[in-house]
Image (cartoon, rainbow, N blue to C red; front, side, top):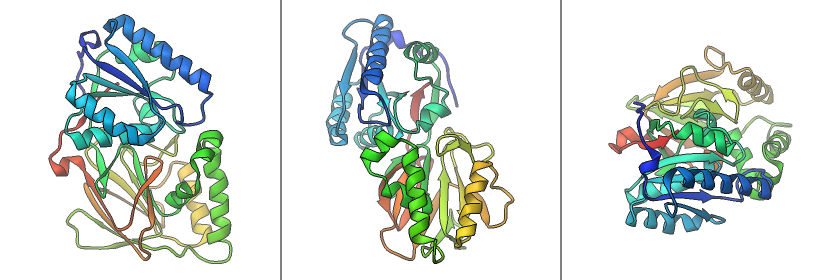
Length: 317
């Protein structure tokens, strides 16, 4: 449940973790906005209470998570994309200490910032978060790896796995369009989609067949599309879409459905809600994408944090 009344001026230790490699950003522009953000927060919270650190490698997040726990930071602001945010929360989750979290958008898609309607302008961002609204979010986990917005396995995760970090940074969303076309040419031009998934929900013994699976943990998918009615990052369940067709025409139809934000009631698509999802594939190690990054692979066990009796992450947004 959303709560109000957090006074950020009372925070003693705040850190802005800035990832200059996130998304398609002009370095000077993004850096200037992050410096402006720090200046504005310092004016409210006080000198020597707001730190800024640059993060170029995710492996350094572990040391920062240790520091945040040891020194009991009040607030962590991730200036980057969904992948950076997910990686930071994963390390904090590992340590068992998670302060208030916020995100300042700087990535390729920024689904979390969009879900919370957080602007990229420092002045407006500060005006928004200083209202003190706290939104608890139950984290999803796929094979133990946290995710915040979406997990996909099938066509979309194969595309994500094909996009290099360099393409992602400089071509942004266009990189996925290019790789989607290439994947259609390789996998669907002369034959049907050869990958098959079996999916089981909660305690239901029935297995469902699918060619692609999208598991939503937020309102948006691929940046701007709302696939599931009533979906929100603060929900304590997953919205799941199973695409059952395996022909090229089926995948073109599914793409059109996503563009039109219309999945429910459509032939060839099964829409479910669940807290626990098990996924198997006809090939070992098929890549799964979490919040836009390939992090794990089949077989998959996907669980809502509530099932693990863990506390939600409190977003200041």
